[in-house]
Length: 393
Image 1 (cartoon, rainbow, N blue to C red):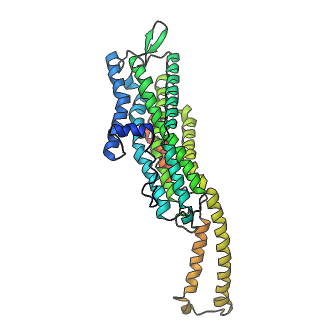
Image 2: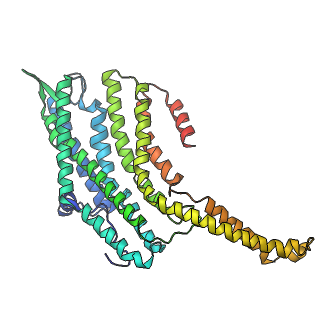
Image 3: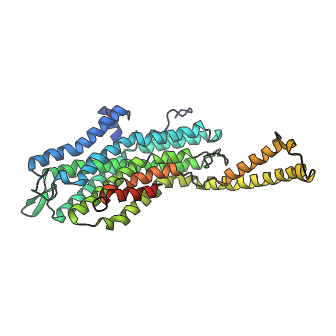
């Protein structure tokens, strides 16, 4: 890590998957290579399924109850979500790198604490580059995929995943591709970013314990840490991916299991609240520091205002009960009175957590938008949009 901060944390770089993309020419995350990487990942998940089901006659038609071209989860997960998870390498990582640069650019870290700042970033980069972390994620992805296969076989539903056999149902060729490639890749990409989210949280917690030069009267009302709120908003693309996946599962329940959309409202609401809590929780690491800063600044400004106001009264009110108004024009004494009042109000407005609408609104929209098509299965679209406008505005 160089002391000028140019080589800051590349949250998307590291691990066996990153090195594989480097070998195949699909990294780093510039626009053209990232687009090709997203197309390759989505194509690997989706195109073989389409080809195999077309050959088997289960891509469309009535040969099975749920052909692949009428399966909401197949579209959502293998085309939309996989693409979003790849694009997150720019949408999320760029915001996080910018946040780290801002700590240096704004000189928020005291000079004596800069070695600790760079040491924390280097430690986070080593965690991102962990081979064992990605192997564990891959093992979990395959475990979840196999569990999904067992559930599909036990459900005894006629879908593109399965074919009839003497013992009941068995996996079709498309089902095998889904179980061995599509679902594990989709889940691995999601778990990969979930792990990076934990690393980012750990890094913020370490930075919060450093000697930071925060300013209670900063106009961002967060002591100068308001940029972290914008950084967390970058995770909206991951919320959008998770919400899209959940919405596809709910749509499947409505279309093929005769479920009622209204029965899913608590699930939708719980997902939105949980997503907000998880993604804004890392900023709680700065709450103790900002709380102490606010209390100390209120005491300091309160004492200073008392002394200043007493001196102002002694000079302009007590000594001269009816001062000439013209003598106050252009005089710096009334101006300093107003400046002190402004500073005190800024301190009072200091938020204990650096969160504002710039972070909350994108996350809420990302959680809600994929749910609209599901709700539209039973509720008119115009009523949905009116309710969404009331929530956001």
